[in-house]
Image (tube, rainbow, N blue to C red; front, top):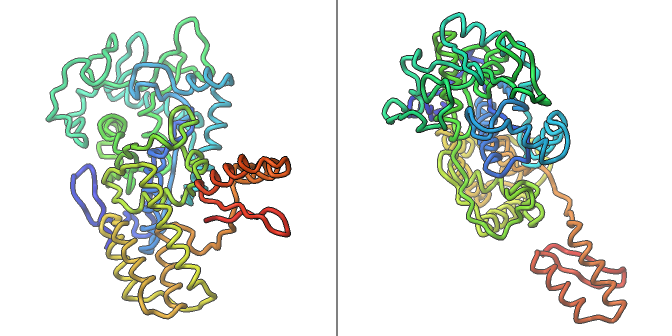
Amino acid sequence: MLKLYNTLKRKKEIFYPQDEKCARIYACGPTVYFYSHIGNMRTYISEDVLRRTILYNGYDVKHIMNITDVGHLTSDEDEGEDKMEVGAKRDGITAWDVAKKYTAAFKNDLKELNIIKPTAWIKATDTIKEQISFIERLENKGYVYTTDDGVYFDTSKVSDYGKMANLANVDQEPGARVEPVPGKKNPEDFALWKFSPKGKKRDMEWDSPWGKGFPGWHTECVVMCINSLGIPIDIHCGGIDHVPVHHTNEMAQAEALYNQDMARFWFHSEFVDIKSKKLSKSKGNIITVESLKEEMFSPLDYRYLCLSAHYRTKINFSSSAMRTAKSAMESLKSKVKEIRCETTARANEAYRREFLENINDDLNTPKALATTWKLLRSDLGKEEKYATLLSFDRVLGLRLDKEEEEKIPYSIKNLAKERERLRKERKFEEADKIRKEAEEKGYKIEDSSQGTRIKKI
């Protein structure tokens, strides 16, 4: 019996799909104006474990993820530039090309982290017509008003606005949550449609009944979600930062138009606190999946780090934490290598039940990993142990069924080439420094009769 923490109810509840067979899940995807950082990716790893756990319980899953390629302003609300326009200025290309570039990068990150791709992707720019229709229906019900800079949702018309974020118990002075926008009736009101700046043509803009412009971020998601999955859906996912604004505003629109919440469960992953100063921040002062690889960490090392903490607790990310996760992954792969075999054995029922009990308790991955290590140290026969491990990995997603080929990074290969050049020039002291540098990065350069060999230490 799967129990999940429901942010809306502030408690764990028994989960089962509405139609008894297939769970309908919507996940807020990336705003594709730049590379995703590791904090973003923790959320997607948590959602992947959620999906895998539901599948492990015998249900099907229809999983929709959006691509926000317009309308997300730099303030996350109604002030600042569209992030896509910021990306276009930074990269010297159109906003449309920015979206293509960083969508591809994001999808590659998912692949590297062994995150199952969604059943379907939906881009905000592909649903403009539907969003305009949605706003018109809200307008007909009296929830909409117009200012000089856009079309706004009147939050005062929703009696329990902010219930998920508990905003009713927070004093809200005008402008307390956002910078005051001229014409807004209430500080919490948010844009459904923003007008294009006068005298300026944007890369992304559309005609509407209210004027040329582009949709608001909060409206995009509610429309893409409901159009794809109906209402209410089973689970709406996102990062914990979405609770007070983005998901609160999605919920308000759904409640206004359909007289019900848009999701039965709201699922949120906690933050990653960055403690590392050593890891590369070459991608605009953020740590990315590619940054981890540059520092000789596998993306699956990071996945293991995320699994080692409960998704609703913060992770303290540091070089030390990554080294610990890398060591654990290497030990795990070493143990798996000892038992890898062709087998028709079934998973051990006692261990499977223990694993299922742990993972069904609000995705308790730390306990699920503990059961995995307990299994590997047990006296079970090789075939039964391996079959049970593969069963667990359907949820953990650590690719334990794959025998990795050792890939030597280009940077290490280049060090070996440079060392060989220096040796030929009889600069042995400099060559020795390079050998030591390679060893500090985890690789040993050896000389043999067949030439230079590189080994992972």
